[in-house]
Length: 492
Image: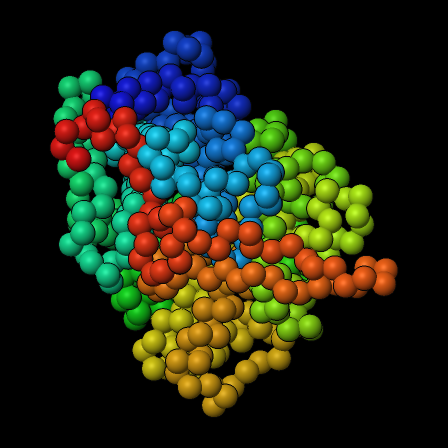
């Protein structure tokens, strides 16, 4: 526990540095570096700045170039799946791709993933505990508390799905500790709660947020509002296999956020102004951490940079020729190019000033939650109606429910999740949720270069580190609690 406490107890000081760029008024009464806990939480104005800084901390904190905040988790969960590949020998996620980290609990990535998420939780705990006593309007207090509940629910939902198998497999398995009070040097480390207990915590937090955020209008999309909360509830219920609740919340979450059209899909996924982005991280160029950023790894268009994350050739085969998304693939045929024989997937393109925004929730995801849930409830017409909302916006013909059995329709919806949400951090979570195995096939596809048929590059790691085959519910899919946390918290 000492390790966890030391990280959290220093949080306010570290957050002072984060807040410098987002609220100059916050430092009117004290210089940066002289920020006290009491001062931070003394007014709704300060707490509002603290939530802003917490969102920035979630997305921008890093312990190394390859740990760009929450985006590092998103990219790790893509490269630990089957549709994305961490390019061999290239910095960033080359150890996550073969399941060496964060499975190895001695790595800096294992430590970072655990510690920075619990920092976010502790900050939310402080806000929830102390906002009522702050100076400021009661309405502001309600909205700030609602945002803190939403963020805490978001992080606990991530943790329970990263550190333990899915709810349907064993809800009584132990997962992660639950902290709802601010941590102090006298705090005692908590034991692991069960999967069910963590989900109960998530639902309670998000339900509180849903009540408190009624009427809240945000000015920027990085703040969780009512639509975001409903989307998080939809994710939660989907994983719990509460299909009716998942479908209902997903439908509510996307109200006001129409599916983007085909041409918008080609614009680079870099701006929260996109009509279907429900939640996202808008950052200025001076907030981007250069090489330590989401786009530094997934944007394959510049001539320099890491360009680490590549699509599997088999992933490209999931797309029909007239699908607008298929136009984003490009085979590199120049032998002098370091990406020679790889397929580029140009979904994510950073802005010219390197201020690309990061998507956290889109209405397409909500449509697919609704479609899958309805299909599993035997409402094939309703499922197809939802699925066609995406298909028709991607230049694909609408399909009919009569063309599918129930099992076939569910598989088509799951495949559409892969096509639509690639790179956004969902693949490993879906594999765990569905209790399936990662599938990585040796590539056999060739391309004509000159007069030669040249083999394209694909998956080069197709077994676990112990050389065993991929199987469902393998511990290699799970993140591990870092060793120093285990050593310092005897209650784990």
